[in-house]
Length: 178
Image 1 (tube, rainbow, N blue to C red):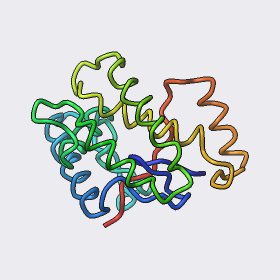
Image 2: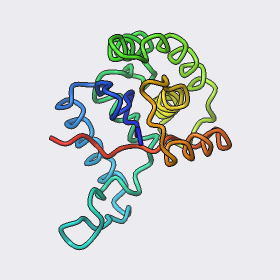
Image 3: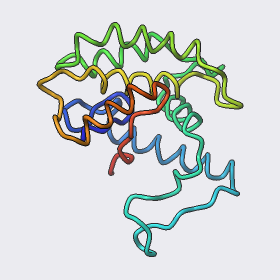
């Protein structure tokens, strides 16, 4: 299945939203910050001590806050925690420019900034970064060009589920490897 992370479909050849090193660093910084902020968050097992592979401290961290933190760490939020629309638009447009998704960029950006502005405020992490990211992921997945779509039963079922559940986030891939 073409899972999403940040702005990009992993298996369709799209680049990650950021330099992978920058993204990994921001991701790690945010997991560390948010885990310390909520020390009661249970830490799941890892493969090393018998758990499933890939499961780590992200469990229990609010995803809206995680996305907001990564946007902040990578300079996509203003000092007062507002989306820097011009920077985000440019970054997303640049990442999609040489892909089959390029023609979608302007409408996806516009729709998703509007979605972020109209989103119900969570208790905390109110920048809109989480909603914007969720919207971009959803729009790219739901409108995936035919030549990039993996026509599998799994992908079709996910698309049907997302159609029925418009607020459901698209399944995400794990954080980037170093």
